[in-house]
Length: 93
Length: 381
Picture 1 (cartoon, rainbow over the protein chains, first blue to last red):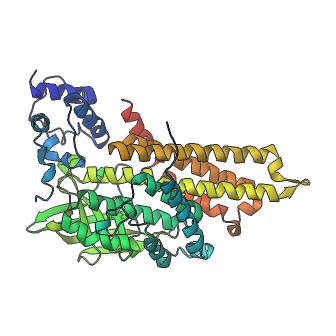
Picture 2 (picture 1 turned 90 degrees about the horizontal axis):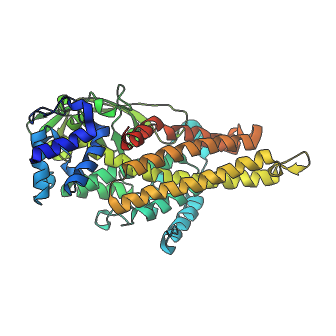
Picture 3 (picture 1 turned 120 degrees about the horizontal axis):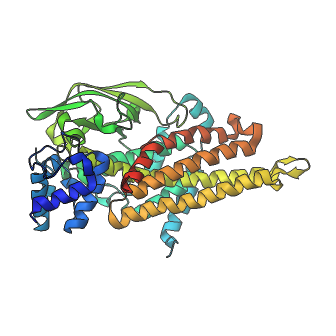
């Protein structure tokens, strides 16, 4: 299973019917569509951490990681690789 | 499972209790009537080390762990009857200082934290808007990047300590299409052009904690004053209220113990039908229920504290604590008035003030309904 498909499976486990029929367009804006809301985010982060063995820091919870499936999969891959994702980029503008 | 506190944590509570009884007792009935904040008591708390307790020594703090801070706040809540003061104090600690510590740049920490810890500065939090309360992230206040500044426009309401604050943590959206992930946090100094602190809001309880609206009219905030990254505001807010929910209630647990002691003393001395009223089951059972609420509330509050200490994230534990303790506090306040009978309804006996103050507990930092939503969502509902 590709990383995109694996992340989509986690998304579907958390948000179910809100995502429509599979497969999800990897570029579809999940924030603009309101698929990921502030309540659901807590569960999504816990599910991603559990499923992929990663730790998602509060500083990582930014739109560029959660906007669409492709970005989310890339973020998870970076975390698994120990890249630390851009949690240390907090002073960027 | 060991539920005991360390000798140091126990000593901290006793020291805070003694300090509060000695230094924080003033003419609270008059100040409550006049909705008057006490800067003097605020500075005494800072000198004792309250505001800095949970923060690193390098910023003027006391370096205490969360359980020790909660124990400190419990002692303070037991000894200090001014719930408004404690509400303002904890609001600053968890929704102003902690976000700066957790998400601020080194420059931001050095600039703001020492003065907030020492009591020289007072901080306030601006999240709620006239049109967005429980649906907090549907905010209308915007932040538009323009050169080296963000330009803020909009308004905030229910900002505790706003009338006396020197610095504000303000949330605004940089892109409404991103929903809650457009929300961004800013540190705004009081003298920033375009920021106006509005009228003081009169309220039912917590009257010694002043509250006001905030208005932003092309208010230019330097990029250097953005807290965290663009779109990170919802997470910053979420973490702040987690701390607040877990810790603000520690002082309420202390207040519940003070209230229980007062009710027992009254029930043992007030006589009707030739007996102390505590000998009647109708009164004794109420007091027994208050004791059960106190003990269960304490367990559930420290459970949230332990979750924060061990894992960092404690959204559900904090929501459970907020929901349970605030509702216990209200019920016990009602019982306290009833136990005191007609005298309980009078200002001089000071139990009616606790009841008025307690009503806010199921509203601030997320209503009871929102806490239930968080818990239900966690359960997959």
